Length: 409
Image (cartoon, rainbow, N blue to C red; front, side, top):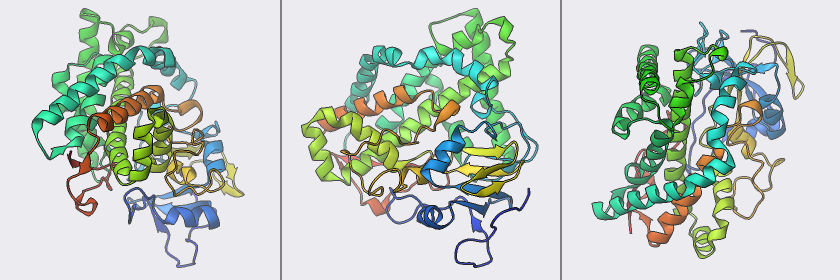
């Protein structure tokens, strides 16, 4: 990669920053280096674990502008683009799914999937989400105390809903959950990563073939019978289904578990929202901004020379657009490190921005609102069963979260 621009961190130590940076202290806090980047070096060089250079873009206005700039690409087929999570760069360039494509190719898949994620469609799903949530909480209640909220609720509801929408047998949950953890772990070797990708891709291709033989009212059937004139290969259709599976399942599960912990750690806010359930939608928006679990999901590469905040980024150089840092930018929102459900937080970038903005955000918001409201209504005395210091957090994952959350009531 080119080496234009600053290569040493603020302070002049002569050693480039390492990326990704670890969240420290309170598990809800973003890496402390982000504040330094925003204030002193909003576009700065860092080094990935494989030794590659990458640019970090940290301010809200710059991140938002870059997310919609057509010169800054998400295309994973371009050699040298960073990998999601920041484990290194892909020097060969491989297509993974439509999420890692640019328009107009990206738009073809998005148009196919969009009808299943509209606000109107999600409204029809809310009773089913409520039923799933009640069933999960019944099982948690009957399991005894303490119960692991991650397994009993946070994973169960998104997994069940996603399987139904896609048309995946619920009995296969363990298969795709285990592969998802491999794909999201930044320490996974390239061989294990390729194996997990191929296993998931093969699984989805088999399901597509099955849907052509036995169609249903689900997303996989629609993908399997995509218009022939689009000339979409089964491998690409399977990649699209896999992206929906991962985004709808793992990201929402992490938000449910970590969001529950955040609410328990803010008892005054929790008491207020329990007393006035109309506050749940804005509480969810603030949790999305505050926690920013998908901060490492926005790797990009410059297709041509661009300038961001006065810094030249040369064509072929990789970037990370730090949406978590942007969500905690004081120029975007006042007192950004406080959890405040009364602020207007809807401009946050937790779901991205521009042509790659998360397709399933309406569904995710509905799940979070229903799960949190029902959980704290049915278990008003819910508490974490162990000190927060004893919990294990997903510091090595592309999506931040908590591995287990023992709760009692």
